[in-house]
Length: 148
Image 1 (tube, rainbow, N blue to C red):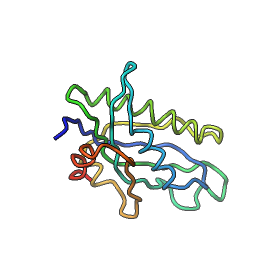
Image 2: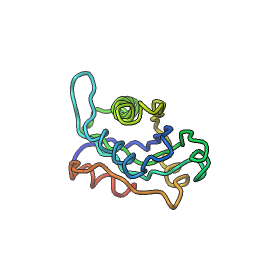
Image 3: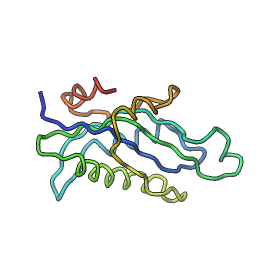
Image 4: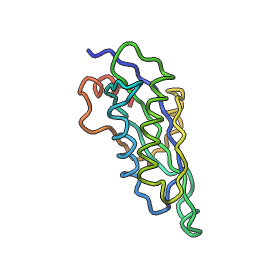
C-alpha cells in the first residue's frame, strides 16, 4: 500500500450564476491531480461533493455571483507530508485553476482549508454532486475510498 496523507478539505468560492457544478468539481479535482512544492511534484487525489451554498435563483435574478463549495478528502502520496503544506500546495493549484477559468467574471480566489472529517460527513448536503480526480494513482483512490 502506498504511503499517503489524507486531509479533509473545504473549498469555497463565488462563481457566475450560470456556472455548472460538475465542471467546477472537475476543475478542482483536476487541479489537485499533481501538487507542487518547491519545484518537486507529487501525485494527489481529491474526492468529494460540490454544491451551491446559496439558494437557487437568489443571485441569478440579480446577475450576482453565487457561492459554491466542495467538501471532501485530499490524499497526497508520500510519507513526509504535513497537512499544512499539502493544503497550501492544493490551495496554490486550485486557486490558479479557478482564476484561469473564472477570474475574468470576477470570481474571488477560493478559500481552501483543512477541516475535521466529521464536518465533511455532517455538513455535506444530500443533493450534492460527487466528483473525484480522474486518472489518479489507483493506490491513492483506494486509500481514500473508505473516507468518501
